[in-house]
Image (cartoon, rainbow, N blue to C red):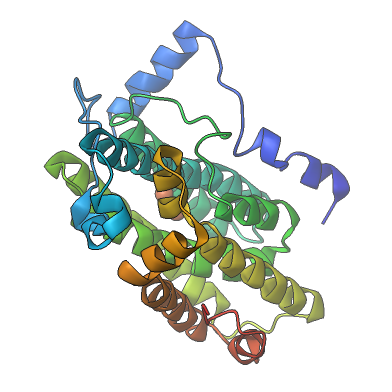
Length: 300
Ligand SMILES: [Fe+2]
Ligand SMILES: [Fe+2]
């Protein structure tokens, strides 16, 4: 991949792109997006959109013993984290689509990616309609976003198809689906369902394009490396505990008890298993077997 091309795709100019302070331009964008979104800017949004239904934190004695304000703060921060993560995923979709349009070898591919990018812009706005804050990457950044940004910047076209479209968009569907099922706002639930339907097309077209593909050595190496990076960043995040510890620190024995009580290991292994199944759909070499040898699908 050309060095100049990569320079346009740094994390700073993609996921962390600055905001344009031009009122006329922005209202033009607002009007254009309003024609496509199913939601409108919400006048009031509850601080907590995901709580006990999603996290089941009352299973933890440490959490149960926190004062009620602290419990609320934990859910409030986790809510913000979920919205921020969704928002960043959509931002990354813009850059991914732009890259794929440029790397398309046919007009049909260019047309399909143009439609996908438009959908990512609509998705980003749907989430913004429920957000009362602009995510600060110092506060709301999931380590997985680094591996996503890296793959978008560095990946060969075929690598991107495997890692971004099949694996990450597939992960996105599972992540959004979990958020939809446990969301406390019916309007936001509807938004997640609509976005899941769109992401299924993005993921599906990745599956179609990778089936029967014969990747070269570089692509195989990249897919292996980026997938490993992605899976490791996913299990390293530990955001639930970190958010609880913003309220009250845990000793190391309290941490172990916490993980046990919320069945953290089982949850992580279920997530990894889902991703493994997704990769098996497009494994036309020994990708899953070599990842397994590296124990990336097992959370110990
Ligand atoms: Fe999207
Ligand atoms: Fe997408």
